[in-house]
Length: 209
Length: 330
Image (cartoon, rainbow over all chains, first blue to last red; front, side, top):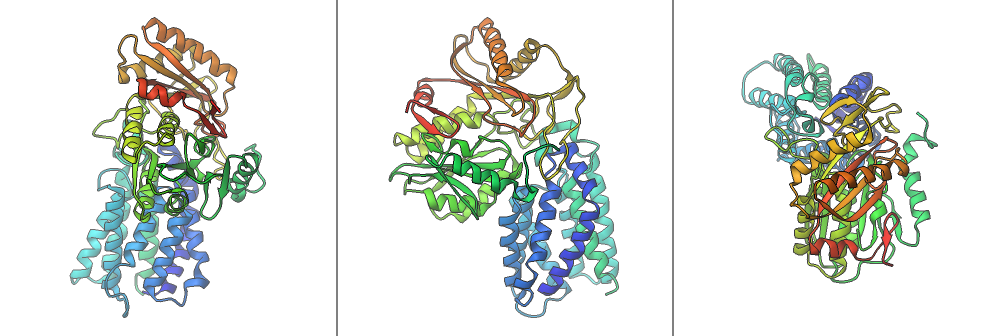
């Protein structure tokens, strides 16, 4: 993993998120206040715009700059959570050498754990963590096991999609949708949908590479 | 979307620019990171109060920066929580050594960003979280109630205590008391349009209202047919009284807050209805506030806040205040 890898992923994700923006916005307007998609789009734009400033930096420095940009440029829950994600990824030990698949898994796991801590949310509460926590668990298995990487990535795509769809019938207990009680049922959580799209895009780009 | 806009991306910056120019005698607008501070430095030994939240609720919070209320306010994008670097910069700018009290509305984005800001700020600080909205029950299924219009009352009353030398602990204690003693219920007749979205946040029929609406247009308890004001006000007050359970003859402050698109004429009519209903229930109204203080862009609707008042609350409510949106006694 390199800073260039991060930037190229951000560009891919930006295209996919823009394609699905109307759907995510509609989900948020059903149960939230409609700001999620704009925050995600703003964040991606800021990261992509950082390219020239960070492309030659070591991963740790690059991640820290991405973290500060996201933290100060987005706002809302997404800004705090994704900022925390990148900041914690950068704190993974031993990032100086070559970052292989196992190390990258460790970084993502560290980042997701920190998001869980910051948002005080767990699975089953109708948030993006419903997608991210199971993905993190699977990454942990992949990291320590002998599964074929391509197979593992396909499984992650499936897990993210299943968990995203599962938020539809959940009662929200966190975030703005939590104020709605029963009325939030029947709608997929917008944060779960955007997270699933991000994971889907990254995994698909890595399969058979 | 019909709004005064030049370019959606410049919406907040240009609005803050105008605010700064219009009230240059009271406040100063700082950019990158964005925060509004008092024109004069916080006097030594006075606890600094900092609030903030998404924009679109004006005059909350920038309009409450000034003598007797806030020392700084951190505006986020429309309906999006501000970022931690704003809170950190504001705290560093206004803290005069007596510490900083952050006043935060109970929304997850605000809570997380203020927490991070507080962690990044090295000086002494503490926070209070407002959650006065009675529309949605506090239960095992919610993170709790929303912080809405009573935040204005908390900022005014705690602001006065800080001005008269209250310590950080005392300010926090009073803020929590005001929050606990207040209950708010909101109703919306129309939606609002977030500039970046360009279309209304929710659909609502011409003859419908959202009972228990939040200050971002997020749904409340139920959607129902519009009714005469007396009936609506009665239902709103019942929800509040169920929650607050005031004693007979208990002194209260009655606050009718406009959501941005309802004229004052209607807000006073609501006040009249609320007075009659509260009087019939033996509840004494000793103070009043009517106007647009905690808005939701151009939404038509209103909220009612009732605050149970003791001597400490009344004394600090009556004390002088000089901000862009609230001024008396000086």
